[in-house]
Image (cartoon, rainbow, N blue to C red; front, side):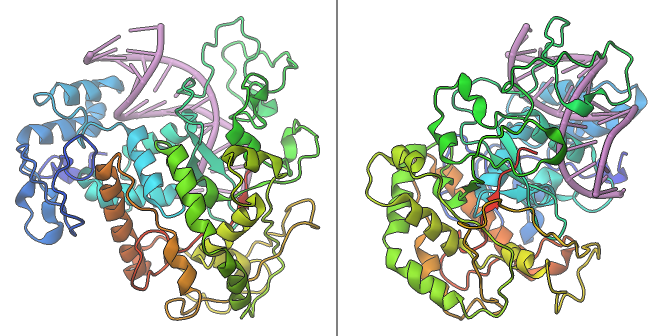
Length: 482
DNA sequence: CGGTGTAAACAGG
DNA sequence: CCTGTTTACACCG
C-alpha cells in the first residue's frame, strides 16, 4: 500500500487541469501540459517538463494525499478518515487530493471525453492517470490501487453509469453514462439501499445469496414486481414509473441473453442497439446537442452510402453481425420531434460513421479468423473467444456491416466522413469541453503512440489530422443489462 | 441523513 | 489477476 513514494514526494496534486470550475482557466487550449495558471496557488506549475506538473507542491496536499490511501494501514481501516483529512486540508479548495471532483465526477468526465462516450474500466483508469495529476504516478501497474477500487466501486454503485456489454477481445464492458442519469434525478446510487428489512424487494438477483449470509439473507420473496430492480437500471425501464424516458424508449436494451437472469421481459423487443452517436449527447446539454448532432450527422447523409461502399473494401467481412437498427422508429422519431430525418438513417449513419474504430475492428477480427497479425498484444490474454454471438436475435434486420480494414485509416477513404462529427463547443462549459478535448487529444495521441503501454486497448483512431474528437471507434453494441 | 471515500469480501473470467 | 458487485465504516455538510 503505501506506495512508498507516496508520501514522499508525490504529492501531487492538485488538479489542475480540467475541472470545470467556473474558471475558464486559461482558455488556451490544450496544451500538452496544462499549466494551470490558476493561481490557485498551486503550484502546480512546476512543471517543468511537460509532464511534469505532477509534483505539486502542496505540502499540505501532500499530506492529504498520503493520508488518503496510506492512512489506512495504520489504524484500521476506516474508510472515512482519509477523506476527512483531505477535506480538512487546505483551505477549502479541494476536497480530495486530486481536486474537488468526486470519483464519480472524474469518471464521468473520462467517459465524456472519449469519442464515443464509452470506456472500459482500464481505459478509465488510464484516463485518470493521464489526466489527473494526482493519479499520474499511481497508474502504473501495481496494485496501485485503492483508487481503482474506488473507481470500480463508483461505477457499480451509481446509477449514472451503465455497463454495456462489449464483445471484443474479452475486454471488459463499456461503461457509459446513463442518459437519464443524473437527470431525473434520483437514484444517485443505484442501490436501493435500505436494506431494512422490510423491503423485500431486496435484490432479486437470483444469485444474490452468495455466500455470506450472516444476515438474514432471505432470498427473496420474489417479489414479482419486475422492473424494479433486477437489472440494474431499469431495463426497460422501469418504465413503469418512469413515464417515459424517451430516451430509453429509444434505445432499450436487448434482452438477448443475459443468460441466467431470466427476467428479461420476454417481450419481443428486438435487440436494440444503442447507437451511441445519436445519443452521445452529453448529459448536460442534451437537447440542443441532440439536434445539432443530428444535423451534423445528417448532413452527410449521402455519405452514408458512400461510406458503406467505401468501407466495403472489405476484406474482412466478418459475420459478426452488428445490428444497427433503429428501434422502431417511433421511439426515435419521437425523441427528436422534428422529424427532420429518418431515425433509421441516422442511427445507421452514425454508427457507420463512427466505424472503423479499432475496437470494432478488433471485434470483427477476433471472432472468426485468427487475427492475422496480432502478434504482440501485450497482455496476451486475449484469447480468441469465439464470440459468436449471441447476438442479435433477429438477424434479419441486423445489418451486417463490414468494414474494411483500416490499417491505414489515415489515408484512406473514410476520412471524409469522420470529419463532421465533432461537435462544436457547445458552450456551456467550455471548460469542460476544453478539458475534454484536451484529454481527448491526449488520449488519442497517447494511445496511438503508446500502444505499448501495456494496456491493450489499442490504438485509437488516429485522427490523421483534422478532427480531434471523434473520429472513429464505435460501433454499436447491444446493451445488455448484464 | 445523504453523499463520499475507502477497504474488503466475493463471484466469475 | 482483473472486473464487478455489494457491504460496511467513517466522515462531512
